[in-house]
Image 1 (cartoon, rainbow, N blue to C red):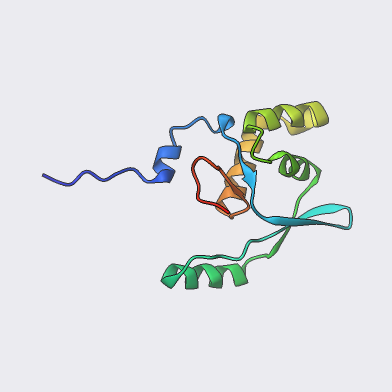
Image 2 (spheres, rainbow, N blue to C red; image 1 turned 45 degrees about the horizontal axis):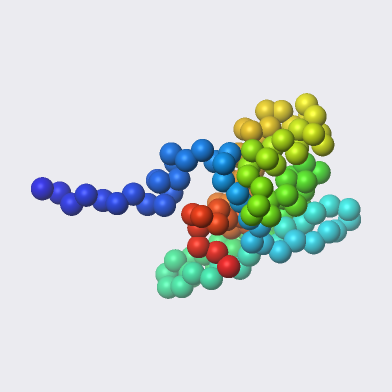
Length: 127
């Protein structure tokens, strides 16, 4: 008989309604020329993975400029509001301009988490 493989955290997360999660910012940011600019966190992994992470960090943009909608969402990901709540705030602020809000916000959160700018406190190890 084969050994049963435990699901990874990412596989467990696939079945979760992301609208109910509360992302929290973990990256630094600043305002430059009236725009919000995220500063890519420096990788803290070790070993071969750490070497690869540091290499790719040097090869990628270290500063990410957000548009008005992304900046608004970013500022509201404080670990207290769910993705759905931030979606409602976006609708109240920007109206039809953000539609389809859940789809856009879901993609934004996915990218920000993948790039290390956000974490899900109940799922990710973070500072």
